[in-house]
Picture (cartoon, rainbow, N blue to C red):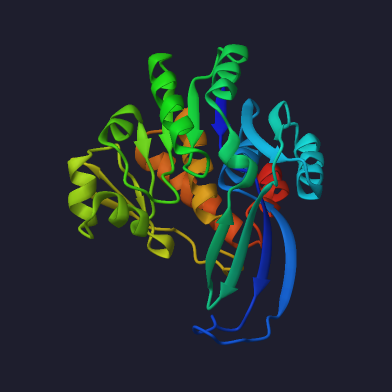
Length: 287
């Protein structure tokens, strides 16, 4: 089954620190790394470790970060639909502290993906059956893409991050909506997660970090991780869950077993620094 991922490409500027600084406080960090990230690229890279037929549409800037990232995508065979814009590339500044992360994203070229880019992508790739998307590119382009994909009969899996006020039509157009608990509270303006998944039976799947995943099937179901892991970095956990879940759906697993696969893939990613560094491990384990 041909899977397409459309979304962001960011170079991640990652630093670790013992504790998050308070307002106005200056602290010394422990180390600094430059990694490949962006929710779209993360999901595409992890999916390509699990599945053979993955397409990726994204945009890079005409700067040094764009050139370096393009070489990385070429090495993975994911560069065929990546465009270059007259802009800076997307950047994410990631702080790792207290076994958690906080992230600031600069959209750059990601915000310049256009409706024409979407039209061309679908025109030259008519056999797409599943579309995976997030909300780190231009929202007007995203809405256009969802409507077009729906008309083409393509199954849409949306990871609505970062969370915004989602038009109900977007929710109606997608097959699965996969927010984390914070994003779900923002989107649905409620912290009653059980009521949310019950209202959108089988459509809304809420990730709960180390506590697993919640969805609705006849009743509210919570699927918890089966194994304890040593967490190194949670940055790519959500993206890896989406990739693993999508792989499960593409291979005709039911929702619960697709969720279990997503949790397993996310757990492996959390044992590595950076979302995409688990690619080689996943490819060896799953192929």
